[in-house]
Length: 153
Length: 277
Image (cartoon, rainbow over all chains, first blue to last red; front, top):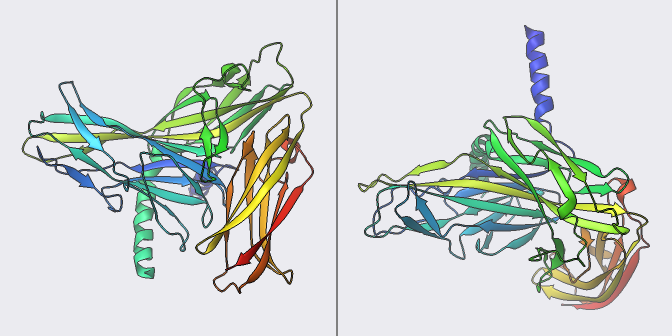
């Protein structure tokens, strides 16, 4: 029984072992706007520890990565019949390395940006945004996709 | 400050556990193919607890520098006949897959170049798109408006296909250094020579009149045509006033690339003088 456990643990450890020379891009959480009220814009700042969108990127120290988002401007109502406006301000992106000395960098998520990994080989990206329901916004579910492109240069 | 950081760290532990389902680990950093074997592979790994939908595609692009000296990817609208694009004749197998939790998948890349392909180096970019399930974000307003956003992450790595004997090299000109706060911006014009991209390492150092190195950096570079990059040299907090030399050297040494894949070229170097402050 114990042997089985050890073998299972070893197998899991082997699976979890990183492969050599790897890159990682992970979507951690999506933007969460909470209660959405008709006619009232709802914003989530990128610094929000719970509701902001969050991504993780790992490469190599001293290398450069170009980051760009493909962001929706409208969220489509599931089943048709309307759109919900979504926008991203010029300060809705924050990048921060994982080293204790890493400083957060605010950026415009509507433009691409290149980071040089000086203090750490990995970093987090936070994304904020605003949804603006119209006064006569149709009820229902609205969906869209946030795409993060990471070019490993 | 420390406490705040520690708290953030605890939060991150929880986040990373749940997040691992929404992306893949990709290896290697860059893919090299040659005309003899015409194949290579990449390894994908889903470290998360949920399945991830993965799609592989290729497109043509190469790194250039913008006006600020930052590297960025140039993606031409269409790769004309004068562009060394391998995109049209590289195929990935499989191109779509569902990666289960903790599952690895090898993706084979096969080249089917045209018969009359000239000697040279051909480029492409591999995009590995990973999509997680929709995250439902519920708005509890009386009108019943709910918002759900899906996350997709795209990992983009270079592919280089080589045929025949190739040479590379680099010319280093217009070396200049400008102070930027507590760092020194070192800029240079780099022009690739030969028939293949220059994949190497830039080393810059700031040397005092006494010959002491007070700051240095080492940064991998990939020059496909030409570039005017900026290298930020972090300076010590109490740098004594005086005259210094900025030295820059470019070599084809790369520890992250298998030696047999490195195209060797003679090192090039230049220096310039800078006054501080």
